[in-house]
Every structure is written in C-alpha cells, then in structure tokens.
Image (tube, rainbow, N blue to C red; front, side):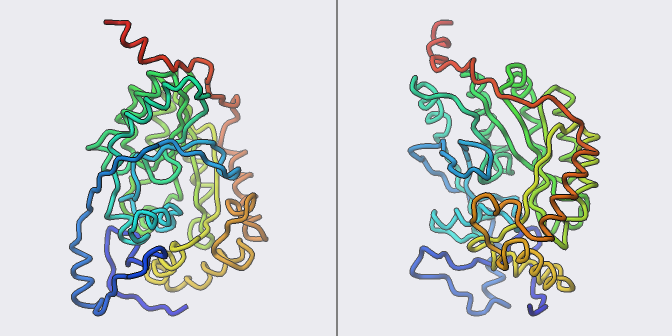
Length: 356
C-alpha cells in the first residue's frame, strides 16, 4: 500500500467521488491538483427533496436485530468514513464518496405515509428503527424536524420505535421521548466508537464529540429512557483498544445495553476507506488493512449472514472477547427491555377527531 499523502478536504470523511457502478458515464478529474479539487472543495451541501411512495422498509437480515426501519434522509453529512450506507447513494444516481456527504435527500412526505401505514387495520405493530441506514439526527434534522414528527406520530398511535444516533440533537426531543418511555414504546442506542477525539475528528468529522454522546446517555437515562451504547464499528489497529474505555464511560453514564460490530468495507466503501486510511494513518495503513481482511476470510468486504457483523478468526475473536469481558464489568445487569405493542391504536386519527 503506497503511503502518499495528497491534499486533504478537512471536515469531510471521503476525499473523492468513486465511480457509480450503475452509471455508464463518469465524472473524470483530469487535473485533481488544481482545478477539479478547488471546485470540489468549494462545493456546499445540497438538499434534494423527494416524495417516496413508501417509507417503512422491511429488513430481512437476521444480523441486524430489527424487522423494520425508517430513514427520513438519504446521504449523511456526518461523513463517517466506514459507513455502509454510502453504497445506497448509488441507487439515487450519486457517488458513495463526497456526494454521500454533500447531497442529502430529504423525504418530504414521511409523516403522511407513516399515518397512512399506521391507520391500516391490517398492520401488526413491530418496533421500527430510526435509522437503519443514515442518522436521523444528522444536521439537516435541526431545520426539517422530520424525526421529531415521526416520534410524535409514534406517540399518537402508541407505536414502538427505536433510535440509533451519534448526534446530541436527540436531546431536543426529550419531551416526546419521555412520554414514549412511559408506555415502553422507545429504546435508544448511542453510537460511540472510541474515546480519542482526534481520531473521531478524522473518522467521523461532522458528528458530536464523544463527550456530548456520553452526555446524551446520561440525560436520557436520568429521565427514564432506556438507553444503550453501540461500540461500532471496531476497526482493528485504530479503535479496538478503546472498547473497555467506551463501555466504562457509557456504563457510568447509565447505559443498560451494549452492542458491537467489526468493520467491513463492502462495495464503494472499500476504495473510499483505503484512500482515507493511507492519508490519515500512513504508518499503519498496511497493518490495519491486513487485520480487517483477516477478520473477513481474507477480504475487507463480507456479506455472509451470521458472520459479517462480528467477523471471524483470531483478531475478531479477541475483539469479541474484550467486548464481552468489558460489558460484564461495566454495563450493569438489567431486566430485559421489551417493547409494548399491545397499546397500538390504528384508529388514533378517529380518536383525535372525536375531541372536536
């Protein structure tokens, strides 16, 4: 792996736009050192509005642990370099690289479709994950407030919902989350990949600080909202040694559950991550790449059910063992959380109308 550092786009995870596998024609950077990079560097985040036909997605994978997801946004300005959701941006005609971070697709009719779905008497309520793909509390949510409206709609229909985020903006919706928690309708996971803020700035450039995320856990826990920590993904050679520290801090903050995954670099994430790795960790790039490969049967990508999320081999086993020991030590035992599906009311709109 050639250790060459070129110009760096600060505040972004990806440093270029790889070709979209679905497009016949591609944008070509003929002079990346001068004109093209200067143009790309000045490009601002673009908001693209869309009106989908459905918003609730059935998740078939047994590895993910949830059956349905809802993603108000496609693309994510957080810019996490390892994000598996980058590949989904190609379906929209964009690149999984810089486009994923700078072209954010906003689904304008989410609430309308959600109400229609919940009002169907044939719908059997199951927890819906916000978000199974991109972060529902990414920066644009501050203005759009779609996630807040989704939570309010779930409260209205008494429908169970779970949230995973790495943004402290979730504290804005504390009032709704508290009411959901009163009916056992909500569970939150906060993603914390380490304790070193300098590494976070490189790996997740536009996310909340680790300390802010710990404050989220502490705040939610104090208000009785079930909250856990997701130590994911673990990148061997970069953040695997921080597992005990993350779990200790999260446990002290009130986390009652913990999860973990090992990094896998499927599709366009592979060249994006490799480029980032060489530019930021040239002294250990080869070692990190080799260890990721060792966790996935000699490849950095992995789509095998039951294996892809945790990896295999000695390195993956040592990571999982460290996680298990740290979890048992720092995450306090608790009664298993169960979502309340019994109070779901598909006629909530009728109930609202009866008030007038």
